[in-house]
Image 1: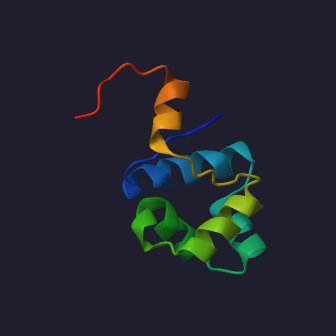
Image 2: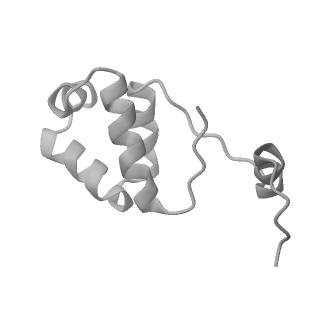
Length: 85
């Protein structure tokens, strides 16, 4: 399922949901990534602290990926008729 994010705080619940869907505890995911469980917790609670390399490694471990595309393309996929201001 695609998730469209516009704020870093939206990333935390997505990461937590992906981890739980994968059947992993924070400790198990931490072991896969070579970080502490507390770091996984911090990533989920304060996703603004994650750098790009960490995000990509975390998403890869959870079998997810990042897709970047022009916003108007996203609006078309949503079926949005909202005018741009």
